[in-house]
Image (cartoon, helix red, strand yellow):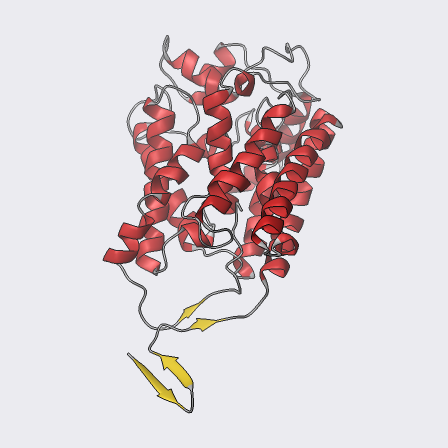
Length: 367
């Protein structure tokens, strides 16, 4: 329903409230990711900048070229830069450089621009680029490098905690950290020192004891992708984004709650029922990066609050299923892509009602 008066057409609700530009919001997201990038450089060396930098440059170059062909200036909104950065974050530190380059070009040229560009595509370009890389170069994306502080580990052949847990769970039953220690998983000296001080200080007053190994998980002192290395920085950055309403809280909240409940009940390896290690599950793999910086992309997520909650819950269920029963230890990118396919159904079944706040241009997290 709409009314027209003196050439002015006013449509019925929901209306759009523009508060900030896409570029300013994307800039804040990029700033929140910088500490994680700096920590990855500290852990793995300057090669990290080559991986992330070339990934970002490739995405921006593809955006500039296609924008020129389509006579649209979208380069300054920063979404292509964010796409390249997230793809680079999803790569292992020893990845051949052509993989993030080609993955970023695919994300921008095929996934983003073939559907019309910013806000028109229904699939998250960054996650599609990661899936593209996993399909085409599975071996290269499964070659890990041990970070500094972790001595006595073969840097090239080392495996992630999730990969080692999957192998160990085939031969024994127990909690994740117990199985990892039995399988020869090394814990850094920094973890031992910090854990001892926490148990003797803050945690002793609470009657809680933290086992060794979790500090390494939180600080990324373990093999893994670049964006997995700084779980604490990811959490701090995400709190700022939620507080500034750059991302909606419904998706990460429902995602984490659903995933956490399933992990607690069924575990991630061979734990007994109702004894799953939720903390281990949260700080391993790309869970935190995907939950707060990828799944929250507004242009590929539902419009209504119930839709957002179901969307996040669906991603949480799929991540759990991929980790627990899939052929590989990680499947977060696949989970996001699958739920992207269901967004139109969620919007049709649960349409947004009343007023809906929306940032200008919908800064596409993962674009």
